[in-house]
Figure 1: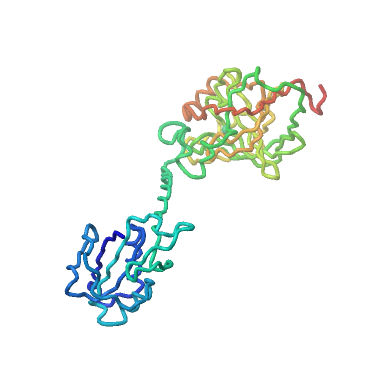
Figure 2 (figure 1 turned 90 degrees about the horizontal axis):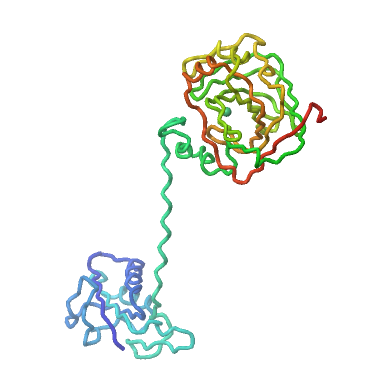
Length: 380
Ligand SMILES: [Zn+2]
């Protein structure tokens, strides 16, 4: 049996505890097949200890002394440590590199023990351990940029998801808004009319840094699909975010409604150039020019019904907020007939917000409903 000697000097630590010795032993055994341990006092005949366990030649003579007669590793180590000066001990390891299976493959006889030349059951024999596969490297945690979202540059729409963890839906969402609608791809059919319940209301005009927004108080709601949504606020995008049959309107007004259950419904009123819009005129008159500025509106000044077109056929689809965090589950109702806005009204908003439109998002197979002839109460 060809063996290889490894010598461990045990003099570096004055009181080498046994568990430490076993650990060092196990570490060495990982490289070999069958191992035999002899703990012995240093003897004059023993070659000088080799600091590195590399290529020490196999000793021609057996060790000078074997502590005890027991052959299991732990007993031999205990015997060795219990007699003489433990700080003067050294550990010889004999490792068989030939028997890869360590003599322990099923059905094979136990290996010969080099101490007593008998076949011994494991105790002196340690299987080579397979090294555990290296754990897969963790993907690097995304680094979020601490800059505000915007419509261009580093905080622009293509990078919203990289700005904050809570904006991740802007990139990963599969039902995002706005979308391009093509009449040829819509589901045409009758649909119930949207029932609008708007009344003169008070409110506040806010320049929030992304748009001009009117926050309303008062009883304003719409009802569709058996659900009533209360109007929270309306705001504007320049140009319009929705693309209808490849056409881009110069502006759109979004009326954001919320049901008591928390579901959002956004009514979109497209704006095309023409006569001045009375509702927009009231808002622009109180438009705050500085970001974060608020201007309260006179009582009952705003009647949202003023801006609704006569023809109230609409497109309907499920989408998202078009601004971070791009929350999905939003019911979109886009009136097909645009309302009017004058060139002067357009110009004023465009000076504040030349571009505050998110690009169109992938439809991902979502159906878009084209609600045909409808009337209040559902009569054609
Ligand atoms: Zn909007």
